[in-house]
Length: 372
Image (cartoon, rainbow, N blue to C red; front, side):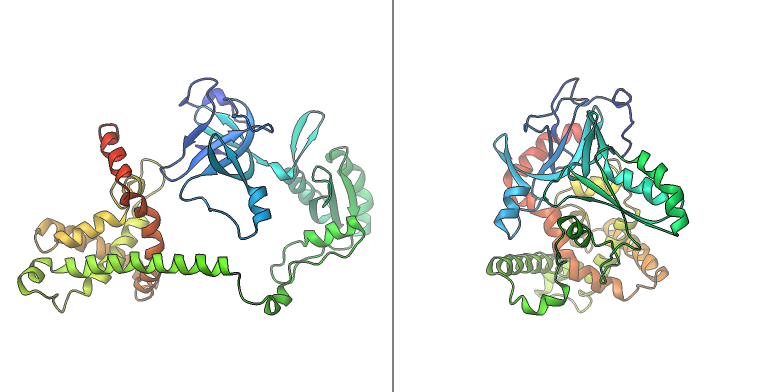
């Protein structure tokens, strides 16, 4: 359970780990979380620390080894990704306390500079506002403001200074610099003002001169593409072959109507996606976390049983018709099957790869009594 309320009472959450237990558990079968303090010690319940993640759904690393050294840390014998998010450990889960790289201490208390920035933006007379950490001193922050008029500036300055932590610098500009491509405030340009040197933003105009991607990147992209193709091909073979599996076994070749399985699979998956709901009690959670090969497993099974079971045929037809109606309602009747088959390999690999490991089947069989 996650909350963004920093004032939530830990005592109001139901305990899952016991009082004082360090948080090191799975939020799903794919991600394990660990909350540690500045000395990289596990934080007990009620404490605040930085959120760390590991698991097959977490990135294995960046192309830049220096970035990897900053983003990953070895804890308790495992490699964890540093999210830079501060969280408070409670019995029912975690409460978001803000970004660790956008926090500073004021009189012993953590202050979320993003909240300070929002208060400045909402202040009367302020046109735009931005909080920026100093490029050389991460704990030192500076507020940049642009006012609607000079009169508004003179009126509001005294009140705004009271809203800022004591060590935050205040700078007034006619307008804040923005990136042409995104329209977002150019924090690099603002930090350049602090350094008194011109700092170049991310070189959008220089992309053409960057040359070919690094070998490591090309290798990873190629491996990812090949994996997606293999999973997509496997699903195509199963749903097309399973469309008339009984006839295929008798004739030795698929029927002319077998490609319809690709349409029923796409529309049935849309139904599951739309009506599956959210949360650990939702049908989509049950399919993705409990059923073998995730939400693709039961749909493929219905295709394989279709020619043998009337009930399987009716269930598959109902799911496919509901998905087709949804696609038609949204004007995606023809586009959705194409979108599905272009992207299903990645999702199928995400949900199903762990089921190729014998240890996963052992754990699932051992947990069946608790699941049901």
